Image (tube, rainbow, N blue to C red; front, side, top):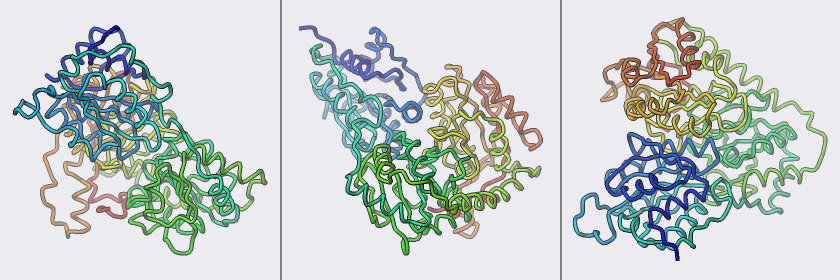
Length: 562
């Protein structure tokens, strides 16, 4: 019987699952795993990060753009606590991330060993599935179960703890095998009940003003073609949450855009409120997407709800028909159930969308053309709309950039081209996530936008992007404050500004110290040339924009405290 060490078996299992990149940070308890990665021929590239949180953010974005499981790792103690925020974000966003934290030896537990903590208890609330591997013989089976958990049903994050002695103990090589197809998501798809599909089709066929509201489930499922077919047959506008962007090309005549308190507008809300039937697809209908459950109103309309997670359906809105299943399979079944009638001739959907967007963008265009200082955030969005190619990936931190790009940057292709960490909205995501996205989709331009508050969270990863020579462009909205909170203090707490302001840094000079090409822009007339040079460069770049503070801006945000 051939034997492998636990660490060798772990690496071989990742190899068989098709893992090609692992993001992580070294530590004492990881030494056997790192030694196996060094010695074995496995085809896996390890990306050394400067923070375990960043490793998780990279794995998250990598998974979003590739459709494969993202893998991150870190050591015990502080490494486990640092990696936790990224795992929580991925899990809540239904993104399959495998977080591996090595640990002290099983035999050392309970003896005040350095870095000892209860990892399984730590990760239980923020993962879909969570295991400490206490025997080396359990490594292959636990990894098989982990990949099944991450990619089937509602995708999510898994944590595995790998103790030091388990990495060194023996594993039978004959147990090193995997089930094909579980390294991509969603796997083992299931469609909704045919009777529910028939009932939903009948309601859709008779609705006079149907509207579709998509969360992240459409893009996760790859259901964009099925959605487009359904929307066009019904003449139904398609609205999205922020996570749902990419469900439909936002230049499509039926694409209403983002709705809700963050990135929505009065114009898009009015269209949503006119609907006599609202079809939620892969959408939790939470506080932000529905502007605290005010749009759409509950009364006087029919609701359909399609989701792969039964715990989401009819929680915040009633469901006249509940469709439990994969979005791609269920929408295909709905299109089939509707038969082959002529496409609707009623123009309510297209006319409503055109009128709403014309009104919304008239106001936007006027501000975007402003040459006032400090530079208006709308100006940055407008310039990037002109400069970026259709296949570019844009990652927006959840602070200043998110509402502007969600409301006004129109994605010209369906699919995953826009990313923002909307589950928990932790600052610092975009700088690190851009590295994972760029590695996952090489050859595609990747731009990450953040406020200066967010920049300070993960600035150390500028060394990583420089070491890897990734042609990412970073944009910093510099307004010397935690703008979202300051705006909340203005609107809800009578301008009692407390502990939200900090000194302005020269982010361009900081970036140059790491080796990036960088520009600092104060004059809006110089913005396009700086952005153009940064985007066209083959090196990592950063543009530091002296921007209008959020509390003074006309941001597309209806409620700062959502």
